[in-house]
Length: 111
Length: 118
Image (cartoon, rainbow over all chains, first blue to last red; front, top):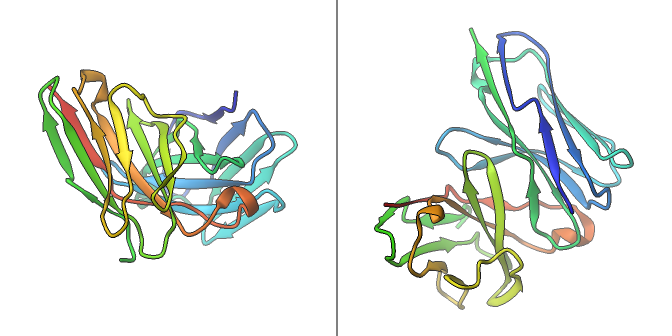
């Protein structure tokens, strides 16, 4: 069965800390992996997309890495800010095109 | 349009009533997806379309759920005889092409419709 797991489930940190969010997937035959952000009561915002042939992607203070063979991805957030508070979701796509989501990491950054 | 539009934003139904949700994909996108988010972060894939044709319906509860994407009309997801467990946020997403061939694109999500069944 194709499953995605995220740890930790929740994280509360003071402003300025560097963070690592983890994602693991059981079937390594992915076409891409994405990290999304979801704010309470809102839709999903795509943060980073890593194709299966890539090792990492960067956008501003965000860096995502992919180790396809071991079924793992990490999202690194540098110098966290209160505005980063949200739920972060990892999702993978196989040849069926449907996104398979992890259960998310709820992040709170306090001033 | 440049964004996926979903209506209504909120929908309240009594148990046993019908619920119908609508989605207008981004103009030019051929693929439409429906997802159900229950219990905070649990996303479940329901169904996808390539234009007006069903592409993958492996996630659909067939007894009460149905969906359509007709030409020149918003896509719709209909739930007959709603149950308490259907309470969730239903997200629609669209993409311009098959992602599961190259992995080079993403699905663009709408803001969701929150369905509450009382």
